[in-house]
Amino acid sequence: MTFAPGQRVRVATRTPRGHHRTPGYVKGKAGTVARLHGKFTNPETRAHGGDGLPRQELYLVAFDEGGFRLYVDVFEHWLEEAE
Amino acid sequence: MHGAVHDRGGWPTEAPIDRAEHELADWEVLVDALVGALSRNGVMNVDELRRGIESMPPEAYEQAAYYERWLYSAELILTEKGVLEPGELDRRPAS
Image 1 (cartoon, rainbow over the protein chains, first blue to last red):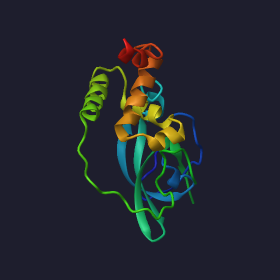
Image 2 (image 1 turned 60 degrees about the vertical axis):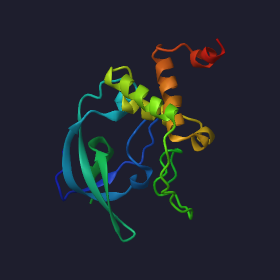
Image 3 (image 1 turned 90 degrees about the vertical axis):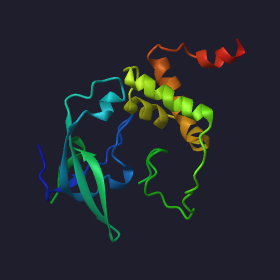
Image 4 (image 1 turned 120 degrees about the vertical axis):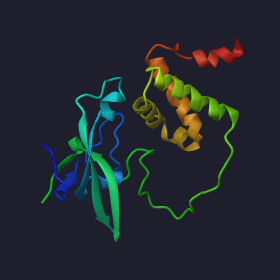
């Protein structure tokens, strides 16, 4: 599914073998979609010689933690809908 | 949550941030150029480079300089792809 700006999302907690670009400090955290960046090839398959297709939606997600608002780019397959 | 050695954002520390500039050595510029050429020619991509770096043993990762990590990864990926023979780079200086 595609998320919309303003929608609440939660980041998956998995730790796949190989390369992935979801930083540990946002795993399991809920945030708010701030922007859709567009679709990009998947670095997780490109890291193993793949073509990265199909392209995955990349989101700018805002996390409010400890009095700070932190913005992190997160691919769609790392996100699920949050309350 | 403490993940792999490279995934260090948010790790607690009291150490000051080292903001010192430093000159690049010739070998560092060469490693950058080499990986850039390999990428532009479709031999390896940046995600493979990152996977190779992230596969370093944690102790080696901590001790390695930035471009030493690039070189480690380039050798690993090129060996995986059969561009280099296993141990080929180690044998070359001796010959």
